Image (cartoon, rainbow, N blue to C red):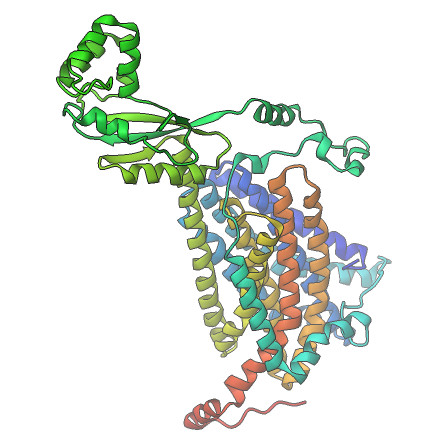
Length: 578
C-alpha cells in the first residue's frame, strides 16, 4: 500500500533482507554470541530500512512527477536524502554506542550490533537502492515491465496531502500558543512519567496460563494457536498452594572471641522488618548462635560447657568463647564451619524472608537491619546481589540515554552547521525527540510497564526512530527554505516528507504492533513501546515540528537580536520568495 508498485516493493524488501544478512554476517565475523536482547535488532533495522526505502522512492517520484529524466530525478533525490540519511545514521549510532557504558555485556553487544546495522542500512538504502531503482526504471522504458502507480504519497491535491497540512495551518495561525499548550502538556506528562515503575523479575518473561488467554487465541488453527505451558501452570499452583520462603545473608565483621560478640549477633534480628520471617520477637535465622543452641540441645557435654560460661543463663555463652568454638570445630557435624570464619573475625547470619516479597523490598529491609546494628554488617545473598546488579544496570541504561540525548543533540547542531550553515536547526530538531521520549515513558506508567534494563534499551530505539522522523522533515524544510518562504517550505516539506513518513509509520506499527499478541510479556511490551514510539515520533514531526520551525525562524532570522547580528556582519535582511 505504501509503494503501490510491485517492483518497488520487491526492491525495498530485497534491501531489507540484505541489511539483515550483512548485520548477522557481522555477528559471525566479530564472534559476538547471539543473546535475547539482539532480538530487538532486526525489527529496528526493518523499521529504519522501511523508512529509508519509502523516503527514497517517494522523493524520486516527486521529481519524476515534474517530468524530470530518470537520472536527474535520482540525482536530486540522493543529493537531498543522503544528507538526511547520514544525519539519521550518525545520531542513531551515537545513541546505540552509548550502551557501551552498560555494566551488562549483552547490552553493550546490542549497542555495537545495532550501530553497525544502522551503518549497513545507510549504505544499502543510500547507494544500492537508488542504483537499483534507476536500473529498473530504465529497463521499464525498454521492456514491458508493469507499472502500477508512480504517484508520490502526500502529493498536492490528494486527501493525505490535505490532512498532513494540518500542522502547517496551525503553525501559520498560532504557533506560539500551540507550543505553549504542547509545553504544558509535555511538562505534565514528564511529571507523570517520574512515577514509572522500575521493577524487574523473572515473571516478566513467563507467558500466562492457558486458561487466562482470550478465547479467540485458543480458537486459532495450528500452528498459530498458543500451546499449553504446563511449567507455568505448575509453578503458579506451587506458589499458591505451597508458600515458599527465601533467604538473605548478613556478613558481620567483628572479633567473635569477645565476650559480648554472640549477644550482639543475636540482637541483630530483634524486632525484624516486615519481609523477615519471625520466630517470636526475633527474626528466624541461622547463625553461630543457633548452631550453639542446636548442639547444646543434643549434646549434654556441650550443654554443660555452655552453662559454665553463661552467667546470665540465657543459653548464649559470654565467657571463654574460644573454648566453645574449639569444641564445635572438633565436631564438623555441628555446622559451625558454615557460619564462622577460620580466623574468627567474621560470621554469617542467614535470615528467612517472605518468598513473595520483591527483591527491592527484601534488599531495603536487609540494609535497614545492617544499618541498625553497631557491628560492621553487610547484606548479601542472591536476592541482594540480583537487586544491586539490576540497579547498576538500570543506572548505566539511564546514563546511556543521557549520553544519547546530549550526544545526538550536539551532533545535530554540528551537522546542520556544516551542511546547512544553520546550527540552530539542530536545536529545533531535538524538540520532537524530547516529546517522544517523554510521552513514551508516561505511557509506560499508564500501561503498567516497568522501566528496567530491557525496556531502557527500547528507549534507545525510541530516540533512534524519533530522530529519523524529525530529521527528514527538518532537512527537507532546510532544503526548501533556501528557495522559498517559510510557509511554502513548510508545506512542501510536510506534504512531501510527511507522505513517506505516513507510509513508514503505518508499515512499522502494523508489523511491530503484532508483537502485542506475543505470549511472552516482555516481547509484547517491546511491541507496544515500539509502536507507541513510532506514533509519537510521527505526530511530533508532522504536527509539532512545523510550529517549532516557525518559532525558530522568528527567533533566528527575524528577531531584533538576529537583525542586529546580521547588521554587524554586513548581511542584508532575510528574504524568501513566496
